[in-house]
Length: 282
Image 1 (cartoon, rainbow, N blue to C red):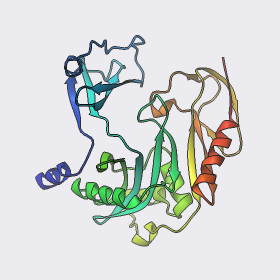
Image 2 (image 1 turned 45 degrees about the vertical axis):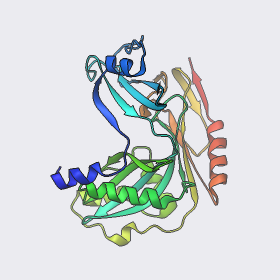
Image 3 (image 1 turned 90 degrees about the horizontal axis):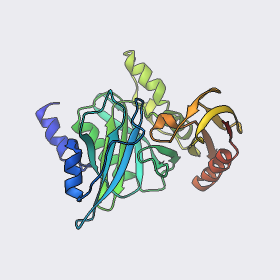
């Protein structure tokens, strides 16, 4: 990253983290005695999350502890500030250095699984303008001039705070939702851009559409014997797949997607469809 871009990025309000802090340091900061290695220490794409309350400053931090041997650094965790507030995702696309915000969606997490999205909702239910402006500034600061963008933002009491900026499509079927609610096909635009085919600004102009909810499915623990559900449901895994605790996005079992004239109706439809799913595990 160029120096100017680095300086600009540092001026963007964002969630603060320390990437290589010793677990012993975390314990000392919080006056804790914590055995950070979980009892189920084993290889696999799993993470352990601990939420710590710092006193007397009353600052909450979230620690991500990798439990798989290949990626773990002995004695080291990701120590990240926890910023309160609802979370939104800004889905966009950059063309010739100009960033186009196509849709802003609410992003709700599963209880007990920080960072794992339970649902994406459009419209977001918030004033989208501050989040859109913050995403534009972050994309410009990082020098992303072409292609899809995915920006996660917390609407903190002090204003929008950037959690993540990625030069890619969202991984939770975000482009599918965006296509339904705006008519803009971000996935097709990303393919064209990758092939060197120009993407016009008119291709990125959103049109009014319905409210929409993508609701992800949390499976029970066990070996999948079978699953059924309404037409709105899509399932990820065949029989024989083993479900463990929900810790990362790939632990989800599938999703339902619903549309309706209003946000509230779409949320009700998603809850109803997800509630009709039946898992059989052994």
